[in-house]
Length: 330
Image (cartoon, rainbow, N blue to C red):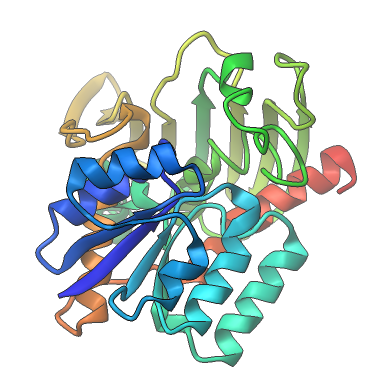
């Protein structure tokens, strides 16, 4: 059994601690945060050792895997340090905050043979409805895919951005709604529709004027397959809704909304399946973390499972960076 330590005790860390707590192949063996109160509270909850320094964690021979749940600007550097210290890494999104940083990390992992030692947390791929969509595409159940529309509408107000100095900044968050909240939806869209050939994008700050980055974006996409795509995202809504994706095929539509999958053929609407709603955290995060963590710990021990290598994040990251280039010249 591999022992894991969660680095960063913010909101998303609960998904990792709970995932490890339920694991058959992994064990929660510590938590770490420079905020001693946060770290101590979480350590007490799970009855595990507490660390106040990332360096102490990666120097501890008892820790096999680190889960990086820190602010975005620390993701790439911490991943490199942990891998160098002989640890495996579960990396929360995004894998980096600039294209140059991403390319440097990917090169580092490849040159040092660490490809099998790190997995990126795109947990929404584990959702029941997403698995069903992918199966139907592979089986050509509704014919060729003709178009795709994806949308995200969340609420992230002044209070949210004030909860951490790194939030809402280019230097530390790397962007706004796209690189943080919508990146999972972007990943799913690309997973279904394939690589992007070209796009026309706009992004701006329309709601929270205390931040540097975008809270709203819209993108018109031409995929390499020839299909058309439309993507929109905003943090300026009054509520946080689950992401929605509609796929138009030759013989009908699939609509993923409210965490259920609808098949629409003419006037006939059928609910094919629903996602598991037994959440450990916010419903908008889904519940795929535990499955993704379990798969990786199995994989590390050669007992099956699966891993999502960093290269799987390139498509979504490049999508975000291209929007930022077009909208902000970054």
